[in-house]
Length: 541
Image (cartoon, rainbow, N blue to C red; front, side, top):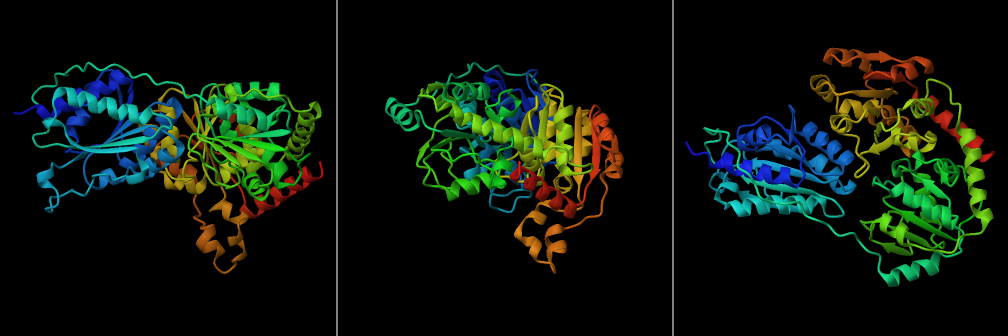
């Protein structure tokens, strides 16, 4: 029997392991047997087995997001490969490195009606940095190793991206021996980016001694909070901190955690002379709208992707924000500038506190008080991340969310990927985001991962109650509100996951110490009223 398919796959996997790959997510399939066995046999790579490809891909996304290094996803051919697209799209827009390894028929079996065969070449199109179609068994050893180096290097190159390798295999798939070949590759080194001298002079001149406001968007890079805070200390620039900037873990009056409420309530203490925006688009729609409406104030965007969603920037620097803040030296702003903002932020935060339970703001406040140091809070898109933005003050946890493409799918699977790396993981989910990924509750039980899921159940799409669609009374509830009438406690019980309903603030706080699912029931109409009252208090603070 010919073992060439397995040998080629095993060499490829060993090369990736030597480059730093530590996690692979595998779903069952025949065509992918050589790859699955190669990962199962490698001692340095944890192989996480999943029953469906979509959940497997989001699980890998969570691993790659929290470790900031590539995770691999292995599928068989056909629609199994297509299931990776949602996670690939999220990874593309969030700058997360993934290795999408799809098994396929060889060229002679394509396009002739062979079962379980679709066109997988460049299947993920613009979601990947690179897509290759290869027949491993026809490649010399050196080319197999070079393929691994290229895939890894392209995935980790900044900004990070998914990479797709479509691998054709001919039968037989099952080898006679599982002897593992050894690769001879070495990890590649990357050079740090540099801010050009002319750009540095321009920025120093443009920003020096100005009443500048820093707006830090979603950035999860080691050292970023410390470097931004160091710049704020020397420049006197207050920082409006998105919850995904990781800056709310810092103890400093210069870090403003009530920025969304200040902008939404029109309670800005003073108008900045210039604005420095770091990273991706902020969660707060109020801030983004204000930026779009105040184009006359010079705005500098510093973002690897060069994103300017409000289309209001006077200058866009497509560079790593850490490089920018480390390089910049400016004359400080007047002393009273930062004081005005820190005082306004303090009063706004006080006005936001004390929401009654059960309510979504109260859930966020309790989470902030109870999350252990160095834990991870994974937040659903839609209302949960917006509530975290408005009501989460200082927190010792790392806050993550799938905000690249802002979808609600794959939430629990992504968080399980985080938990798989050994981090104590908490999830703040909406009911619809949990429904999207409810099958992942079985994965949590099967893999025995220590995860605590808090689901805010408002029986439908709560965010639409804050949007113009609410003015469509004949169609709103059925088309947008979409009530489901479900409780998640019996659903979790059916999967074998510990689950409780928290009807008091004390019960929620005590249950957070244990893995499992905690359901909090809220009312959509009441939430709208509570949010309106909170902004009224901020406006009058």
